[in-house]
Image (cartoon, rainbow, N blue to C red; front, side):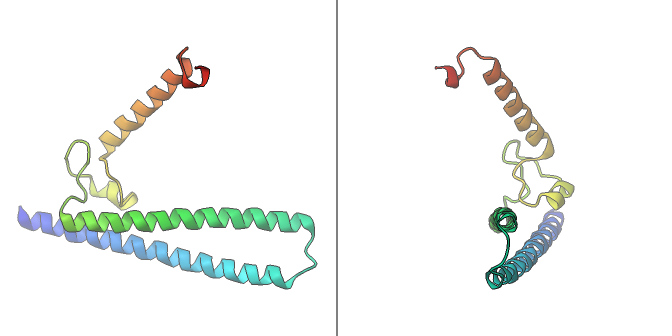
Length: 140
């Protein structure tokens, strides 16, 4: 039993490290592309106003994507810490092991798929209740 647990831990550690490296490589590429784009923008003072607005929107989107990827790296670092503590891959709600297929897709998942679905359903129902409630906060 202990060998199975150790094998699973090693497999999950490898998965987390690979995912972290994949995201870091994406970040490096995006930062490199962005830096070269900024340089080109400064070099061309004849860009039309519409082009500048389009560039600004693209820059904003790129910035948001960078932030999201950075958050993913942070979540993976937290997952690696939980792995060291022996709590990684254990559902925070029911205490059962999270399926490795789920962790492969979402390596920083805190809930098993059943608990995640239940939580999403509760959130959806609470949202519907708030929409139907005559005492919704927006009306108070």
